[in-house]
Each structure stands twice: as C-alpha cells, then as structure tokens.
Image 1 (cartoon, rainbow, N blue to C red):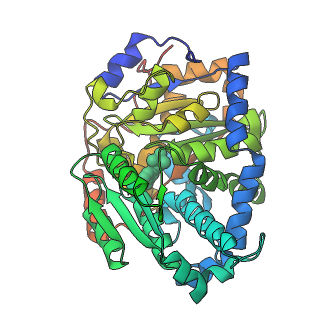
Image 2 (image 1 turned 180 degrees about the vertical axis):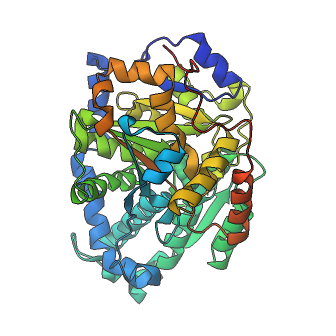
Length: 460
Ligand SMILES: Cc1ncc(COP(=O)(O)O)c(C=O)c1O
C-alpha cells in the first residue's frame, strides 16, 4: 500500500530530529482516504462503540460491587467535562481563538488514567466471554454473576497478562485481580516504582524489564503464547482496547449537549490527546469522528523525544520506524508516552481521520502541569499535560494558522472549543506530585507559554 500522506518539507523533519517542538497537519480527503476510512469503521464502527458502552452498562453493578470508589456513581467509570477559562488565559488563548475545556480522565476512578477505559473493557469482555462459554451467564445478562464463587473459581484458572509503561498495567492488573484472575504485568524500565508497588499490593505479579516499552510488550506476548490459559492484552494490536476507548465518545457527546455546547460547521471542536503507542487516542478519535463527523478535529500530542506516531505517519504503512532511527532517545518525564514505535493498527486507522500531531518538550509539560493546578485545580501527571500545548500550536504558529485557513475554519474560531484530554494523575503519590509542581513552577527558558507565535514549525 502506498502512503496516503502528502510529501513533507524538510523543516519539519529537521525539527523532529533536533527534538524541537513541531506541528504536522493533515487534511486528506481523497478516494484513497475514504477507502481507508471504511477499513477503520469496519473494525470499530458505530455498532462496536455501542456494544462497548452496553458492556460497561451491563457491568456497572458488578463494578460497584468490586470497587467501593464506584458506589457513588453506581459503577459508572466516567470523568467530568469542565470549562477552564482561567487556564485558557494563562496559556495565552485569546477569546477570539476559542474557549478551553478539559475532559478530566486524570480523575477516572479505579485506574487513575485514560487506560481505565480500554483496559477495564478488555478484562470485562474476556471475563464475560469465559462465563458465557461455561454457562455462568446468558447473552445480554447483567454481569453480577461474574462476582460469584463459581465465576471466581473459573477465572482463577486463567492468567491475564499485559506489557506496559505503567498505566495500562495498573488498569489491567487491578481489574483482572479484582475478578479473581491471576494477573501479570510486564513493566518497561520507564515505569514508575510506585505503580509497581501498587500492583504488588494487589497481588499482581510485576515482571520488570530493563528495556523500553516495546521490549516489555514483546516479552509479555512471547510468554503468553506458551500458555493456553493466558490472555494477553496486546496494547499494540487489541481491538477490544480500542473499542473500550471509543465508548468515551457517546459519553462526551452527552456531556457537551448537557453543557449546551454546539458542535457543527460553525462551532468546530478541537480535541488534543496525549499519545503513547496510539491506542487510547485512536480509539477516542474513531468514536468522536463517527459521532461528530467532519466537525471534530483530533490532534495527538507526543514528547519531543518519543514522537513515535508522528514518525509513523511521516513514513507511511510500508515501514515501521522507531524514534531511535530518528536519533531520538525516547527519554521523557511523560512515562506513559515513552514509546519508541507506534501501534501499526492505530496508525492505519488514524491515517484518514487524524488532523495533526505536535510534539512537546518535557519542560513545557511540567510548566503546564503546574498551570493546570494553579489556575484550575487539576492534579495531573506529566503525560497528561501534553494536550495543553495544542491550542497554541494550532492558533499561534504559521503552520497551524495555514491549516485553519485551508480547512475554512479561521472565520469560526471565536465559537471554537479546544478540548484538552487530561489522561492521568489521580493515583500519583503526593510526594511525587509535589516535585512535579515544584519543577513546573521554576521559570524555564525552554518552556515558553504561550508557544512562539511565528515559528514556522510545520510542513507547509
Ligand atoms: C497518562 C497517559 N496518557 C496517555 C497515554 C497514551 O495512551 P496510548 O499508549 O494508548 O497512546 C498513556 C499510556 O499509557 C498514559 O499513561
């Protein structure tokens, strides 16, 4: 298959190699793109998004039983959508450029990150499938039966395994062990010690690897392949994960409607999603694009040293490069985004749908983490701060403005919503969070707020 993407000017590639913030935009609408789009919707279509939402609904009672923190919500795992005008001003977003809102997945209960969505969905789907197979459940039944002694005895025969930089491991480990599965999490060297400790306290086996995320996933996958009683949650290839993430779209649609926020041709919605291997932001983008059509514009955000999705998009589907091939280190304070090579599945699905990708320096992540706290009371981890550079990249750079003009969006920016998806933070220990805050409050020449107005960052 040939690349659907236009040729890219070298200035973007130079900035990427030099680990400088940059913005790549994509405006594809062609026959090839439409064909690719139908491949994506065949894998995660409206009916799959609905099925994932229905699975969460069927399992709400079960989840409220398993996790006391879900009793207040009746087992619903959702996060608030909030307007953040003071943070918008602090980021330099002028009123005529739109309004800043935040989708607070940093506060998602149970796992404390966006990974709760996909991870818990896949564990529930696996458990439900086993229970159906063994006659413990009938199709469409409420899932309370998954917490009975008979179900627990069945699940104890199986292992659920995953490779992770940390947050997916937390989500899978906690969900699987709570149902009675044996759980194993293969952690990359980037994974934070407190995440490993938290899992061990839950009885989850933590397998430590000295290599990066990709090596941890490969090791976990290889070990699982030798055990017929092991279900491996494959962050690079899983459709169940993608479908779980996509269920965020109808929930957001309902929240926007309830808040009286319009999304249409003259009220564009820009969504900024932190990206690691690409599964979480891709699942959400698939959901949003099918619900809001061309009126939603999704941008992925990556650390300057780990822009694996951008590198994949620039290369096209005939190759699978890593950030090391580009002379980058994959070293970042954003542990959840420290991924050297993108998911090919996510990249394939995103080719026709993604509006752009930008990169962010660690100093900016920490500065935005502190601003989010100081102006909006949001307690997020560094990975989750990547979205906050998005409005500046789009409205304050030559490349961003050229793209807005080309899309005919420039006249509508005063009515635009910039929705930053904050993807993790709830469970970060206080001592670690205090250090992040301290570092983010120290003025840094590397991190400018807002980003430089005229830097020609892009591929124009
Ligand atoms: C806090 C946080 N945000 C975003 C992501 C990105 O998700 P994905 O790796 O599916 O792209 C991760 C991944 O672990 C994460 O931990």
